[in-house]
Image (cartoon, rainbow, N blue to C red; front, side, top):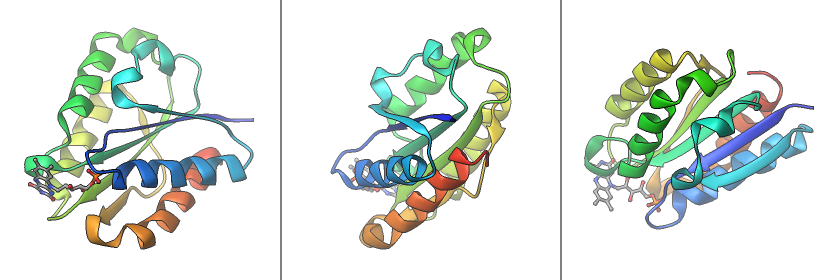
Length: 145
Ligand SMILES: Cc1cc2nc3c(=O)[nH]c(=O)nc-3n(C[C@H](O)[C@H](O)[C@H](O)COP(=O)(O)O)c2cc1C
């Protein structure tokens, strides 16, 4: 059974609902799942998981602040991260998410995480449609990307 951690940062709840959909997808594929806000995740938490799914909003065309702090903690504790851990992102946005996606991509390369599945970008005005994409992402990551 794979172990998947889903983490999120939200202001208004949309990104949290996408994270919950990803959890539901991963669980439906038989994974052992956990969901936590980004502020509650430490590098140690990546020592024994198979996949990390991170959901962020896009304030000021960037990942949200606590999300960046999480990546900084992960970098400082990168020796604790299990090699080959899969990673996928969900970006909830109003405008073009490419700059945020590129930035997260660069960071996961630094961290040695393995890009899994097709990342999900959801317009904040179309969250209901995005939940199905997030659910499918959860399934894909649970199945090894
Ligand atoms: C302070 C602030 C600044 C924002 N700036 C942007 C932005 O530059 N680009 C963008 O795509 N969305 C921006 N947004 C909209 C967020 O992407 C949107 O609120 C979010 O996707 C909704 O998710 P949530 O309900 O999980 O907070 C901003 C939101 C806030 C609160």
